[in-house]
Length: 359
Image 1: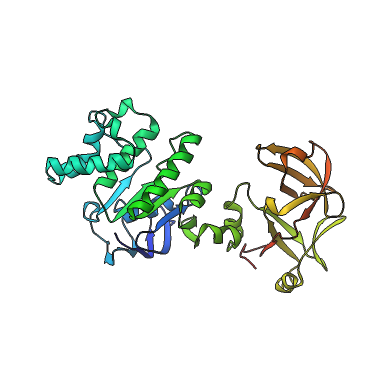
Image 2 (image 1 turned 30 degrees about the vertical axis):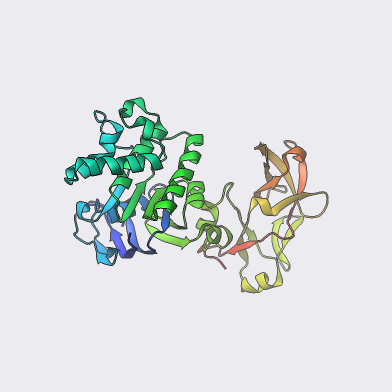
C-alpha cells in the first residue's frame, strides 16, 4: 500500500499549445479511494495515465510511497490498471486471464492458482474460472479485469472508467461491489469517471477537474454543501443546482418584476457593493407554496416514483428557470402557475457574477 502525491504535475500533448493537465496538486492517503471527475477533456484520464506511467510528466512530479516516479517505467511502479474495455485475452480462460501477469513474473503454478481462487472468491467468480470471456456477461468480464488487478497485490489500483460499458442497473450494482471490495483490501485507489453520481457514491474524496485544472478536492458532502465555485456547484448534484444571475436589491435579489428572493443580512454584507450576483439553490431546498414566494409556470414534471422534479420558468420575461423537488402525489400539472419559496432550512449559495468564485 502507498500514499500518492501529485506535485504541480503537468502534461502537454505533442502539437498542442494547451496543457492537458495543468499544475495538479493532490495528496492521496494510503488506502484512500479517490475519484477524479469532470467533463470530457478535463484531464482526468491524462492525470491517471501520468500516475500509471502511460503519459510523460512534463513538469512537476508524482510520488508513490514517497518515491518520485518521474522517468520510472510503468512496469516498475507496482500499480494495476483496470480499463474501460476490460482488455481480456479471448483465447484464455478466466483463471488464465487473472493469473497471466503472475505467470509472466515467474510465480509458481500452485501459488498462482491459490491467488486466483482467493480473488475469484472475493468477486463471486468461482463458477466461471474455466470459461472464456465470450461466455461471460459484461459485468462478469469487468469482475475478471478486477480480479486480474487484485491477484497482483499492487500498491495502487488505477481505474479508468471501468463501468462505462455496463447498463444502468449493472453499473449501480458493480460500483457498490468495487467500493466494498476496495475497503476490504485497503489498496490505494484512483478512479476516473465522468459520472458525478458515481463519484459521489464511491469516493472517500473527489477531485473535480476542468480544462486540466483542479477545481476542488474534498469529501462528497463538502463538494455538495460548500462548492468553491459556480462550476463545481453546477456539476455536482442531480438535478443540478439552480444557478441564476440576478440584480441585487435592498433585501435580496430581484427574480422577476414582482418577485424578490430575500437574503440574510450577513449574505448582503458579503456582496460588498455588487450590482448583480449569481445565486445557487438546490432543487430540494425549494418548496411549492400557496402564497408568497416566486410565481412560476410549470414546463415539465419529472415523476421518479419516490419523488418528482418540477421544471419551471418565472414570468414577466425574466428568463429565470428553476427546478424544485416535490411529492409526486401532489405534483402540479403542466402549464400550471405555482409559487416557489426557499425552504426554511434551505441554503442560498452566492457566486461572483464574473469569476464564478464563491462569495
